[in-house]
Image (cartoon, rainbow, N blue to C red; front, side, top):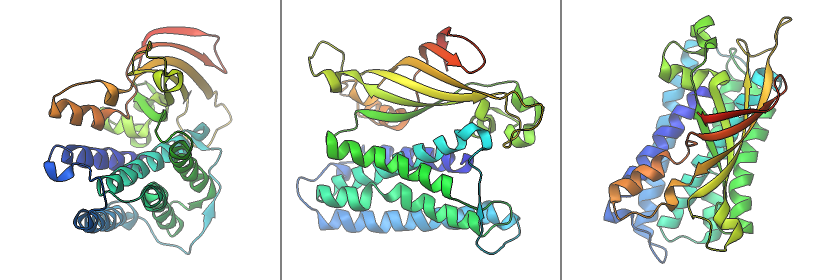
Length: 293
C-alpha cells in the first residue's frame, strides 16, 4: 500500500488546488457540462494511474496466473490501515466532485464514494497477476471498510464527523533495512510502518451541537505498531501494537477568507496534527507524549 499512499496525496493535491477556480464552484443543480468534464478527467486519471503503476512497478517482476495470497498477518495489519484510508479519501474525492457537478446524492454515493474501492480493486487484480504479490482478500476487506466508513456517515449524518488520518515520525528501524523501509524521509514515510500511525479523528462539535466546543476541535484515536523489520514475524521478533488518544484539528472548519488557505487546509487535512497524546502498547504501560507525530 506504500505506492498507493503517494497517489492519494497526489489526487488530494490536484483536486483541492483546482477548487480555487470559479469553474469549480458547486452547482445547485445538475450541470451536464461539468459532469462530462468530470467523467473525462477521472477516466483519464484512472487509466494513466493504472498504466503508470503497471510500468513503474509490475513491469519489473515476472507475470503469473491470477493467484491469491494470505497476507493478513503481515506488518500487524498496518498495511491494511493504509488500504482503508486510501479507499476513504479517493472515494471522498469522487463523492465531492460529483457534488460539484450538482448530481444527485444517490449518484454521489453510488458512483463517487465507491471510486476508491473500484480503483484499489483494479490494483489488487494487478497484484494477482504478479508473481511478486498476489490477490489479497484482506486488502479487499480493508478497502471496503474505508468505503463503508465514508458512505455510512453520509447516510447516517449527511456529513463526515469521523475522518481517517495519518501521521509519521522517523524511527531507527529504517537504517537496519533501508531497501525495505526507506533510505530517506520521503521513502520512510511511505515504507516504514514502525513510524506510521493511523487515526480515527472525530469532530467534537459535530456530535455535541451545543456551540461551546470549537468547530475545529477533534478527538483522535490512533493505531500503530513497532519493532518490525519484516512483513512476516520471525522467531526472535518482538513486534507489538500501540494505541493512542490525542487531540486533533479539522482544518477545513477553520474560518478564513483566504482562498489559498482554504485550498491548503483541504489538501493537508488527512494529516493528523502533532498534539499531546496518551499511548498504550502491548509492551509498555501508559505513556504521555507532549507532542506526538
